Length: 118
Image (cartoon, rainbow, N blue to C red; front, side, top):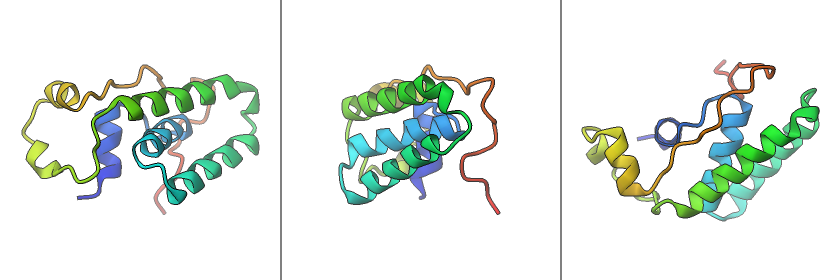
């Protein structure tokens, strides 16, 4: 099972750039390694090169919230997601100590997915 989309659902982070940053830092907090760090560096460069740099506080909020929630959550690596599919999402979040994000997509930032399918 590919877990990226499942983690979007579990954490509540949307698929826009802000949500991807939040989910990326959630990953980073769970798996502090070079690939995670490289992904985070890519997000940082994307933000720095974007036309939305004046909204940096929104991006930083997603960064911090994702990291804090990833550190607080139970380790998700190796979780058998198939065993969780029948479980109520709120019960699953409680069991895994995952608090869903309070960050909604910014109304002035392009709502298109950060990485659209081609």
